[in-house]
Length: 222
Image (tube, rainbow, N blue to C red; front, side):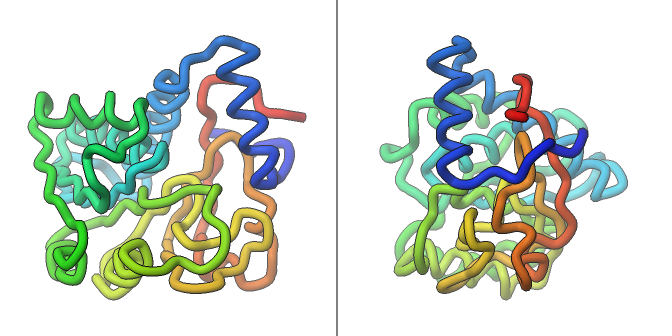
């Protein structure tokens, strides 16, 4: 873990990922593995040890959700009891996320599906865990969350459990640090490569909590 040299905008995050994959030849699934493993380190430190802890990972369909699947696997291997609450259709998972999703049952991780009307009961399920990991949406989200994603975020917030956000709290704008609608209120945000531009905006810390920067195995932009 080390601080990033710059605060990245949404466009810079996208450009950095493209450079790592297309120009440097680092596969997206490798970046996801590195991100998830290093995030698991930060979460284990936050918990004061993973063994015996119950961790709920609420995951969306994109690469943020894929990071969450990797986190769940690594915490499980360290002795945590992990359950993934999938807030998306399996068929809609991105290719890298799907690859990591397919591993979960091999390491004894339960997947609970929370789509549509079932998301309304999510908070009750989360209340039994020591920690909730927000891996629903990432830096690409713009504007107010609506419908199912908004409901999932609201359920995370009312569950009353400590929350760690993966890369950025779902619903918080990467560039402005503002929430146009519901946004996860995290106790800790494990962000990748560097802080995000919006994290330094007034009021953003109410959503991010403490921010820790984790690397993904490639040099950060300078």
